[in-house]
Image (cartoon, rainbow, N blue to C red; front, side):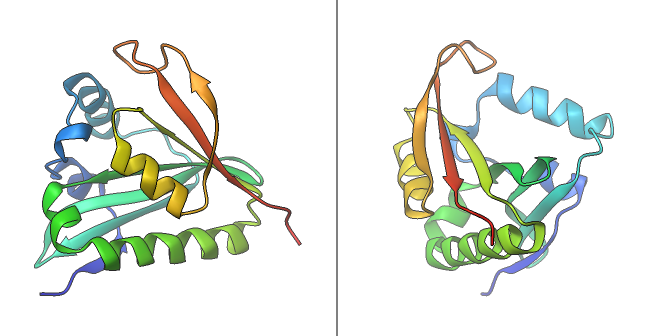
Length: 153
């Protein structure tokens, strides 16, 4: 089987069965309600990862202002188990092209310290830890702020 990477729709994102470490009811409820309400119209990119029409995950970024964006990802365990290499390469490719196309000098991401695989993935993508954000999560959990930065030519 081969996965396809396409522009994500709201319904595709809502259909994802997240991996256990992303399946926090408070976090998911908040995100789902935003999607059901039509979401906030923000500039950015949303990519769905499809296998035979079934959405296994999605990722992208939201542009905050010129040059700065926030990365996000929602991956199923099936996607991580069956397609880790193709997923990693595609995410990296999209980040690099997004930086060039949008002239981004900073892409941020947040992650809990409990999600060690996400931390490793961010570091593989050349994100660097900038610090701890205390009581950041919807349940008051601490998160780490990571960023991928560079000078724009």
